[in-house]
Image (tube, rainbow, N blue to C red):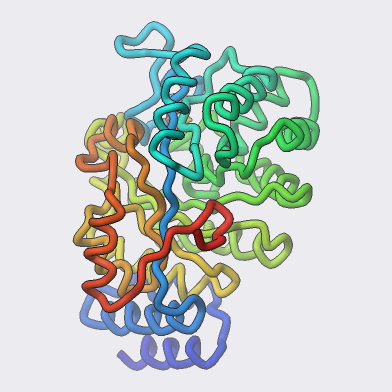
Length: 361
Ligand code: SF4
């Protein structure tokens, strides 16, 4: 306990964790886990108080056809695969109208990186959504999609970002990060942008006032050292730009994914790893206000415990999530705010609806 308890009291006293120290915490296996989650809970309380937030949002599926076919993904398809689809304007607007009627404040585009998509396709998507759901915040496009649009259009990623912002994009997605360590990316997502490009594109977005989420997809092939290297990259970017709205922790859903089926990845994180990812993120990322738990991937009961371990945000209502569902998650589609209220109130905390940019509604 010695090392861990000294470290935790140092952090609570204002010490910024080093990568080695954070890795040590991630590697704890016994009862000290509870001391780590308690320290993270205290920091959460100091940083954001008792309020637990969520956004009323809906995922809008564009296509599952994808040039990347990452080994950890059960959603992406080749164009010739059974079940491959690509929605047209009518299909997109039908989903957007439904979201509008559900009074969402955010529509999140969930999509494969279709090899035929260009910057113009992305601009059309933004316009179609805004036509069908006026005033709704569009949260879309990862650095990998931005790089794809730039490459197809023969322009720079900065130019793509500027155009997307001009055409009404609200925030970009901090997805396609997975684990920002190239030796891991070569195994789990070899066709996605390398770490340096991801970092550059996110900084370009933040530089023009397009904020983003930050994400980590953990529990597949990477080590604890890789996870901390990843979080260290996010912390450095946040020091520089302050452009991340939150950290979204995404446990690997393994069941229907090639990496797991081929025996390369493990069967996702354990409950210990889920809690420590939340807690150590809270302790290590001293420049992030919000640490989000993915209820659709860890389940509602683990979500509640994560709220005692440093998390303060429940993400969105979602209404549909084929990315998690196709990978083998169940109960990942919709969480009614009444059910959020139940688990939050049960902890003596307060639930508040927020916008994508964390203004309380
Ligand atoms: S994770 Fe995204 S980029 Fe990778 S195959 Fe799935 S949909 Fe495509």
